[in-house]
Amino acid sequence: METDEFVAHAPLDAEVLEAWIEAGWLLPRQDGAKRNFYDVDLARAHLIHDLERLGVNSEGIPVVLDLVDQLHGLRRTLRDLLSAIHAQPEAMRRLIVADLRAAVLDRTDGAAQEGPGSDEHQER
Amino acid sequence: MGADPYQTLGIKRDVSQGEIQKAYRRLAKKLHPDLNPGNKKAEEEFKNVSVAYDLLGDPDKRARFDRGEIDASGAERPQHRYYRDFAEAGASHPYATDAGFADFAGADDVLSEIFGRGGRANLRMRGQDVHYRLELDFLDAVNGAKRQLTLPDKSALDVTIPPGTRDGQILRLRGKGRPGIGGGPSGDALIEIEVRPHPIFTRKGDDIYVELPISLKEAVLGGKVKVPTPSGAVTMTVPKWTNTGRVLRLKGKGVPRPDGGRGDEHVTLKVMLPETPDPELEKLIAQWRPASVDAPSGAMGV
Image (tube, rainbow over all chains, first blue to last red; front, side):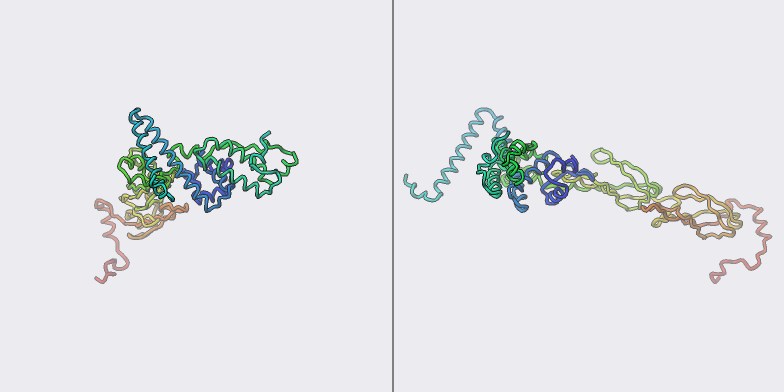
């Protein structure tokens, strides 16, 4: 959608839109002199609006957006990884799950030994 | 009729506006679908909390609600999709990033193949400019033309040569370079123009220079001659008694300028004797008795 239609649907006016684009919070695709917005931009504008309502100030918003984007990147990759594991033969899946479980156990054991007060449990 | 908005926000009816905002913010932080992308139930609850706050967060609406003038369903929210619905869907939008695990890539060859998608994808970059050379005929450069360039990928690029294009000029075609990265704008195509020389015209700035042969008769008696210009032949009057080297100016017959004007054409005249000797002319000149000694080389001190 072009700028006018975007402003009509998004929780902002033209001036705020310019400010958000200027700040790099929204990245419309440039098509010659025209700007193109997609549904993802609309949803992001709603998120920014909600963040402002939550009391996040203009310094905090790019921090939140960046972390949210990183989180989504991680979730996407984790999902890809899981579906790749799922596509493996049964025996292979069991091996992977066993290794993962061992890794999780290692981590929790290590944490227990290094944590505060762990001395008391050394001689258990 | 919706649920009681006070109950939804978990507050008493007599709390201050500030308390309402606080309650909303406390709940919304926990429930916002984009801040809690793994919580599928959050969306419905967040919607209820938002509807309640739309009503109670506005002191006027709250007062009208308290007086029973409007009910909770009066504050229906238009449906919108959350950012998480798009953000996780794929890397095909400019906000996608692998920065959250970019450091994994260096750890292992296998992992780098999986995670090394070129680092931070939401780095929005303008595409590169591409450079081309285009050779033009003299008159195409002066009068403007359309040309087609064939690009390395076999696609064609239409180039409009504006009138008045100069040798060495670089035409910029916006957005015709390499595509951008992460939704960034495309680069430009930069076309360096090379203009071939013309057999009769030369160009200096916006002016055209041409040398025009005229006959002895035209030189002595004057008359109308045809002169080539970049935009076609025109008729010019040669004054009586015109010598070789005399320059006549044709105003506005030069090179078009961007402002709509045009330079001039300067016509240098060159008196020509007939190609083959003409006995009649020789007789005429032999009988001719100039008033003074006619030896122009005398002016050079010889």
